[in-house]
Length: 581
Image (cartoon, helix red, strand yellow):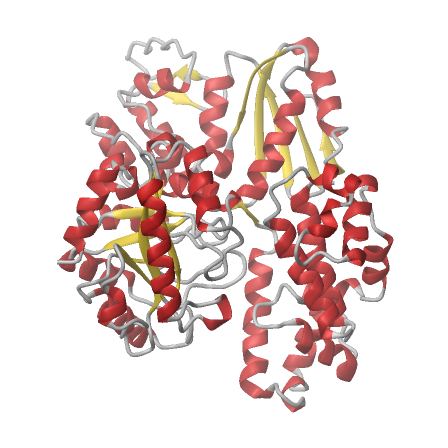
């Protein structure tokens, strides 16, 4: 079993122990061990075999045994026993926003609630409000959050769907008879949340049966929903439905375009084809027969580029196929050269062991250099974020001196000094001017009091944005995809104020956030607001989340010129200085 799966299991075991009412120190030990293992950078199987895993701070003998069992056997009796004591429906309740293990345990004990359906009925009957610590408002919030959960229950985060698709395609790569392969659908368009996975291959007729056999027998397939010669549908163990379609190589460009979507983009493609005397479907062009008119010659199409060219259009990248002006721009050949992952030269919103990060300043800088970057910005939490190890003023001074010392020795690599400073409820900043003056840049974020009205939250954020020391707004709507809705805020006004005061806005690239939303990125760009793509990394591995942020930037029509951390070290340094004026 891989490290990431084991990290998740340790975290789950801590939660299971909480649900069972176990000693809080024991449950906390599993949570801490999960975090410790996440930050472990060595060879895990070797560490298990040698016993060195017990030397990792936070991993005791008992938890080391669980890890060892999972690494060597792929299962743990301790984990299985912990799950046995909890009804599956109780675990499902953990997915409801605002319901933690303690409250769920109370509901189970007092009202014998063992499922989301039972919880919903109890809330509608008014039984929850009578429980100590709940009340009518809590009851109403639970009903609202159950409804929200059901709306997103068949969705997956982009990385989960991408990994699942990659594993399926990798297994098909060398199957005899396959000519071309691709993902399609919303995954290819890099939507932040994915409904299902669409895979497309072109192949010889004689190979189709074997290809489908290989597909439905993949180890990740939990259930075969339907199997045919040209299309099969399976349910993967990750909980995602996956379709595979097989077409001829001549049909491949048409099918790829059609099954990539979006639906609205496809409708416009067909409309434009019709104007040229062509009928377009998912397999080919055909000439439209009109009385008294000569048939249009069928253009040769070997690729999607040829397909767009046949319609008098520049090639539209998949990310832009959302009916947000791509046809007008493609028709006039003025589509932007979109940002590429290799354009990034660093990032600025990262955490270290000074607050709630898993790795040290030196480790984070080393990981950034390994990615080929020129610079890294450290922005640990301000003092108000005590739950996340927010720094004291003394700790800030210590960190600033450590970064200065690191930069004196660094060869061609720069660490910028920053802070993620909490925006307090009245819009003031968590740090006074004396402390703010120590930083090269300031990221401001909302971490509390999410239930303000839209007017109050907007005033709170724009007041903070106007502060002369502020560089950028972090995770601007506070959303957690498939988990927490954005707090109410007028982002149009926020973008307007950012433009007026020369402030940047972050695309928080953590795959649970991807915030700023891509729909707003284009508006921010048109308003003259610069963007940073930041991973909000709390570990070395977390730096790679910038890849997901690039996908959102591309969907938002952003270029290298629009994204500050795609600029050189000198240009970033100059920008940070200018932003404080």
